[in-house]
Image (cartoon, rainbow, N blue to C red):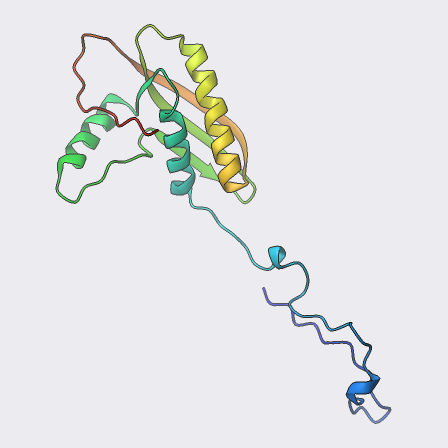
Length: 162
């Protein structure tokens, strides 16, 4: 949106502009106010999903993100030349203009308190998303889809991003 405000002018009775000496000093408006309010910033769902995915992986007790099927497809995709690791796997965000809601699917390590891990994930994700985007996080829904047992082999080792 462009603000087309006219500068303060004095006009002569004939409709002509007055000389520069007749203008009020120091009243020139340019751009219409605070620079931070000139324009709009939009944040894509994928950006919020990446931030949330990285923040969730930082919590001790989170073994992996996503369901078994998505992790299997992700492992195949990661091995393809040119493929990249999906840090947003297991995260779905709905982003509005001022708020966002997140759904996370996690796999926890055996022996940890699931409620404690979920609480820590929720806190870490909310702090990271709100700090980096300025959006208000209205909810973080967490679904624990699996427990990683000590004797189970990893389909794909999850990178610990520290």
